[in-house]
Length: 424
Ligand code: BJ8
Image (tube, rainbow, N blue to C red):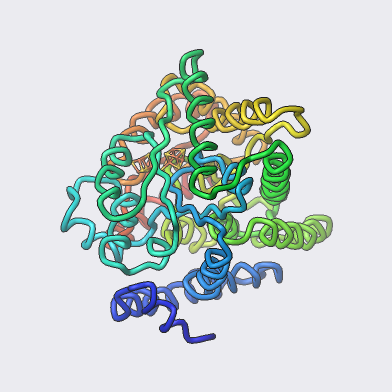
């Protein structure tokens, strides 16, 4: 592996602490990922990207930046990627998934705040991740209270733009959201000095649809019994979707799918046929948060077959209509597609409950883990209604609320094992 210390120093990282962070990841990755049996060969690419996520990928982003491409760091799947692409920009997800940076965040932010936000803020504040040093612009959104108030503080450190997300998907919500999408297009044009033509936007729409179709194909293969890929590997692919070059990522996911298709045809899988199938539903799993999937799959008693999450189905479901004649039509189609994402920040949010019920059937799910990050009120409260619906369908459910720390691993293992016994 190349030595990137020179690049990290130029970015102004705290090298000692950054080394400390990376040193902790290697052994965890070996234990959680590389020790798995029957891994598809196509996962080697995603292992490589993960190992180079602070190295080669940052080098690529810096090269693009030098050539004038805008790098945009985002915290939510509501920020339209095709608009960033239409100005030749690169969209990277920068939510935090590590305990490492949380004590740094807590020197500024309240402790009783979602770890996803604190982790991101801590990396930025303590200069321990290149992902908060490279982007030209960060884009936040007014989803939950924790995020929208933290963005006000982020603005003191980095160039920041906030998109307003409506609370509901009614007529007024739709109008507001379309206006926000148009405003974001104008913001990106101003940042880049490039005017978005229908052709440029169409290219972005098609590229993003190809990426979504590849992800949907990958998730569809998990419907097989036995599934040809572990839930942990599927999670990793979903996490890498936020970092890798979109075209290359799409190609590699399709290569992986070709391999998995052959396995499915031969009845080969990562577990025995009939192994209990779990869906994890709720808050996103930002890189490198793998704790829950690892516990579920470690005992060999169950396999995760679907993730109803923004690092999962919510990222790739629904396409943007292609081939519409005018720029206005295309922006409208983008706004419509994004407003179909069922985040718990919306009220009412029946569509999410219906979607979860549909996934239970499509992925032949035996049990659902409702996952909430600590202090995430919207997912936690919405869990009450999701649970009611699932119980009505006769589907066993367990709730997990946790953070990125390791202190509750033993307790989680015990609870998850008891749940596995219930469904097997
Ligand atoms: S569309 S899920 S990516 S907002 S977990 S920070 S909600 S307190 S991440 Fe999200 Fe967009 Fe919704 Fe998806 Fe707040 Fe909850 Fe934390 Fe969350």
